[in-house]
Every structure is written in structure tokens, then in C-alpha cells.
Length: 438
Ligand code: UGA
Image (cartoon, rainbow, N blue to C red; front, top):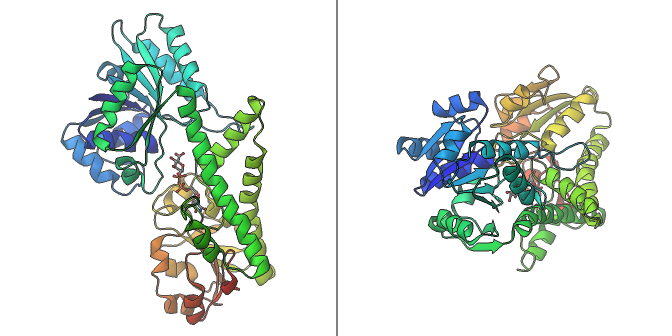
């Protein structure tokens, strides 16, 4: 099929590459000329395992191309996906100006007799589909189109496998013609397809992300009780997670959730529920618990070091999760800035995120020393903090780490290491909600 994806961010670019990989012809449209130039030159603006090969292979096979022209994309495609950002506003509600603008632009280039399915892939509040349809109609009276909601559930860091083998595909549609075309797009993925009305599909996305955030906050609240009682949250998570009704996924205690989805989507769902007159107070508690994790953790570090000012603190990890270079809304970055703000000498290392952290001015290299290796960060450190659970951190030479440090003290913000192993290496080891780690 001929598909157009408007917006070449995480969702748009990975979706475009995966659609091309299964044999569709895909035009990716972006209004950022610099990004289009990069992609046309074979450079991938984001780090996502497997994405570069996928893009190169499909560009070479002429199934994937990039342009800045919406008209080009819409003209050559039966289905037009919208995958532009929906950032949060100050009050937590969603800024839909990019969606509205794209809807107007699509209306502006739709020609008479050109039926198109306009698919919203961005995360949007319930009832956005209705507004997109109204907007297209208002700016193009004769337009022939249907609006479909098709939320995306990929995770950064494993976006390609998530997209190629999804748990489910949700298609929110009020038109059989559009639903049939959408089913053909997804046929090669061999995943279960759930067809719903448009509003339900939109709600599924916010409800799913909020539920996953709730799971994380739940286990983090349990971690606090574990710390107070001498239990071990990892064992508790294993024990409750073995119940199939609960499941072990997303029960990893630590510094809390970050990134550009969960914090924004929980806030948005709170705002949407308020607007609809059915406030979702449970989610306010989810947010409160999440925010408290970093505060509690820093308090633990402060308790041990007494004062943070002038202390050498090594931090491993800057990205909001492993296997990505995304540092937006990263708890690790908040942690680093808090320590540096308190006067500590922070030496930080991340396998992929350091460059963007500096480029996007999230970290000031005049205040935080960015290191080239994990070991370099540990030189003379009075403690080491693990902030993001990259696999490479688990495989370090801990004798060398200990020898490099001033004091063998580790605070593990993601429960990556085993308390026994760290003790055997001679470290004093603290983690989150782990009895054996105190
Ligand atoms: C999340 C959802 O998992 C995806 O399904 C969704 O498509 C995406 O948001 C989106 O809305 O676009 P993502 O934010 O990329 O994906 O990454 P996750 O793996 O969900 O991690 C989010 C945060 O939760 C990270 O900071 C991670 O460290 C934290 N987390 C995750 C925990 O603290 N504990 C866990 O057990 C799991």
C-alpha cells in the first residue's frame, strides 16, 4: 500500500521504517528541513536499536523516502498518518496546535475525488478525531476522507521489535471502508486487531499509559514500605508478579518513571478527566508517589554523605531509560542537576545520552563533568550513583571501580546490581526498597 506519515519523530520514523519493511511504500513528511536533509543523506536523527539498518535497507529498496511536502505525501498515499508531537501545556492539558495545523494542511492539499484515510497516531485526548474531521471539512468542503484513531504503543529503546510484533493493534474507526484499508496495512504484522469507535481508541492510549505508570508508582510505594520494614521489593515484585492477573512487567522499583510519555500522559489524563467532570484522583497520587522517589533517594545520599557540597559524586546514566539517547524528562538528569545545584562535583557518564544532554542544555558542562567511560567518572568519587540501568553498567570491572573511587559506596537508583555481589566486592551498597542493601 502507499502510505504517508506526517512527522518523523520516534513514532513517525519508526512506524514509517517498519511499514516499509513489510512491503508498503512509505513517504515520511517533516517540516523540519534539517531533519529531512539528514534522513535523505542516510543519517538517523535518533538512536534506536535496529532503526538505522531498517531505514537504509528500505530506502535502498525504494520503499521509503523523505520529503518536506505534505502535498507530495498526501497525493501519493491512500492513508495519511499523523505522528506529530502533542506536548503538554502548563496546566497539564495537551497542546494540539500541531495536530490542528496538520489537519488544515491536509485539507489544503486534498483534491476532489481523492479519498483518503487520515489516521491519528499521536497520543491525543479523547474526542480529538472529531475535531480533526471538523477541521478538514471546514477547510475543504468537498474533501472525501475518514478519520481513524490508531494509537501507537512502542517503547523507546525497543521501538522496532515493539512495532514489528505488537501485542495488539487498535483501530478506532466509524467507517467500514477505512477499517478495511487499515486492516490491510497491518495484515503483514500478524498481530491481534481490536476495532473500536474513535473515542475508545483515543482513550485506550491514555488509559494504558496511565495504568502502566500506576503499576510503577504502586511498586515504588511498596518499596518505601519494604525499606521501613526490612523486606525486599524485588522479592515482593517477583511474588506478586507471578500471579498472571498482575504480571511481573513494569513492577521495577527505582527512581520513578520519566521520558516524554508517562509524565505527560498521566497529567493529560488527569486534565481530561477534570474537563469531563469525572476527576481521576488516583492518578494524582500516582504522580505524587513518582515525584517523591527522587526526593527520598537524594535524602538517602545526603544522609550518608552528610553534606553534598564539594563531594565528588559519580553518576552512571543520563537517559530516561536504557537503549535510547533520549534525555527528555529524565529523572537521571534531574538527579544530576540537583546534586550539582547543591554544590557537589558531579562526574557523569552515559553510553548514548551525554551529547544530547549538553546540546539541549539540560546539563551544563561547566558544572557537571561529562566523562568518556564509566571508570573515568568514578575517579576519586566519594560515592557512585546508578541512575539508568544500562546493561553495560552491570558488566563493569568492579575491582577497578572500587580502586578508582575514594570511598566504596554505591547508591543504586534502579536496583540493577545484586546486594550480595556488591558486598562481596567490598562496597557499601544502597538500593531502592531492598533489605539486603543497607
Ligand atoms: C511508554 C509506553 O511503555 C509505550 O507503550 C508507549 O507507546 C510510549 O510510552 C508512548 O506513549 O509513546 P516509553 O516511555 O518509551 O514507553 O518507555 P517505558 O519503557 O514505558 O519507560 C517509561 C519510564 O518508566 C522510564 O523512565 C522507565 O525507567 C520507567 N519504568 C518502567 C520504571 O520505573 N519501572 C518499570 O518497571 C518500568
